[in-house]
Image (cartoon, rainbow, N blue to C red; front, top):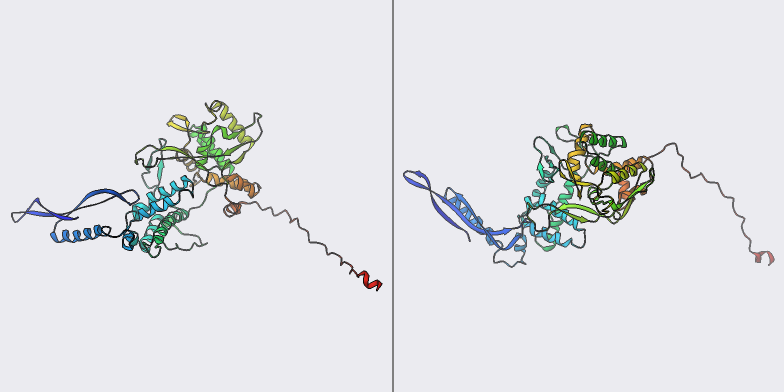
Length: 455
């Protein structure tokens, strides 16, 4: 129920106190998804200078409160008034058992970060195609890059460090919104999905603001990777994280897979100059437990690699990389011999000390070591995932078969490898096709039935 409360202010006009009109009402509490929390309400107030404006607002509030009160919850009107957050929760719950928990957690984080602030508490019937178009345009707008410091807290980088999202990222966000609204369509809340197909992609060169170049993958060469590793070891004085970057670039493991590697996953010979291998069996990600407050500390959660092809895959180590890793495990890693479950690369306890009991945080290594190194060496904007691209392009350019590289990367299909790295497959123009022209075969003599000759 809403009502107006009249108050006398300290201001006076013609000797009389000036009145203000406060519209008061209670509305349901909503969770982070915009869904109504059963049995909980919160007091709301708005102050107006005139009684006419207060009455107009009172009418709006009462109409809104009556929209979900005294109506059959199965009716079309009640469904149309349900906020998007309720359908978002319904969509995420429907994924349980069909996807990995880490994947579902990624969708939930994406919803909370991008979609909930814009549409979470908005009735699904009030979301229009124009709203979606404005939302898509805002995702392409420059935004402040998030910086991950050593202690793991995320802060906004000050100054003009604005970055833009890639079309693939925007498509992923808008696609999640579309699938949530598909649930509302199936429920009968809306007649059609307001998320329309985005503009068609073109093969023409895209122009960007301020003369910047469009986003593109940035794989590095073996020499560039060696320069980056040398810079980290020399300028930052961190041999361990320099080896972690070198290892990631030549094995192609994903960030979460690197964080999940343990000492026992490495197979090395005692003989120098021999090859080794690693087995990718798990991932490790930092996340808050379900229901924990936003200021709760992050916990390490173990998961499985991205696809079935990624799980339990074996990636070979070149002899030189096996030698460097053997030296690291025997002379640097303090727990390699006693604790096979110890993380392969350690996290940080402080700026000057490692935490060998906790995994490395790839985001921290990127922000404090890889990114500054690439900037100092003039290599441009290089992401951590570009180390994985580097492994693929280096091996394909060296003549490795794409099916073998696909297995090392753990791609779900060889088609993905071909479509992503086709330009890097080596084509030797000096090698002629092995199929010959062919030789005409002599015509076979026509067989005459024996019965014809003796009859």
